[in-house]
Image 1 (cartoon, rainbow, N blue to C red):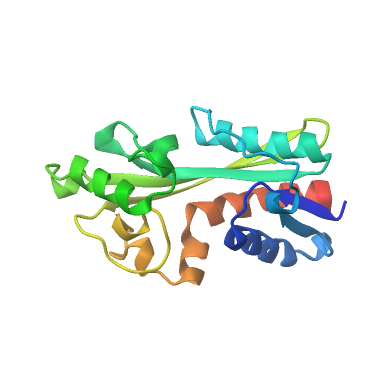
Image 2 (image 1 turned 90 degrees about the horizontal axis):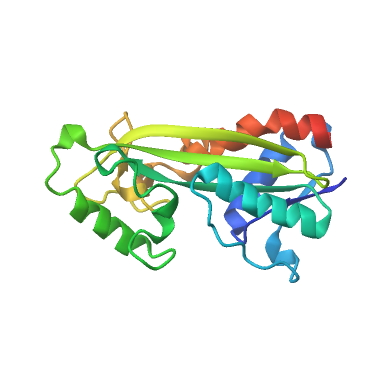
Length: 201
């Protein structure tokens, strides 16, 4: 097989995975394509209760529909004092999917009275590989940190400006290369890489 479908329309995610694939000589020639290349694919509602369930829904749908191996990821931020929320609702925490600023504003408002030492949070990403025929493989990456009181940095997206890592910087203060090396998504995809090599190499 020379095609791996990544269940996203995000060109940055496609380029990141292609870069990871290209680093493996045994995967030479494997091309990563997004779902935008397949007009017959619908967007899959994220109805799962966990990140891995949502990633599985998306990967399995693409693999079944296209008869190609497909990878999907789902990720979000979990805040301890909010019982793990926003979690799988991270992208639509304030109501509208993908409104990063509204999501940040709501999360900051919900934690405004929480002592700084209790603002423990983590980013989590689950990635799933679905093979034609139903075989599934998954990997997870997590990054521990804490929420800040104010936004800092201009890089990244989502909750990056209010997620501080142990080195004192937010993800939005990391360069793209630094974030890719340290991020939950990067960890998850790197953890899946040996499976990709075994099955597709």
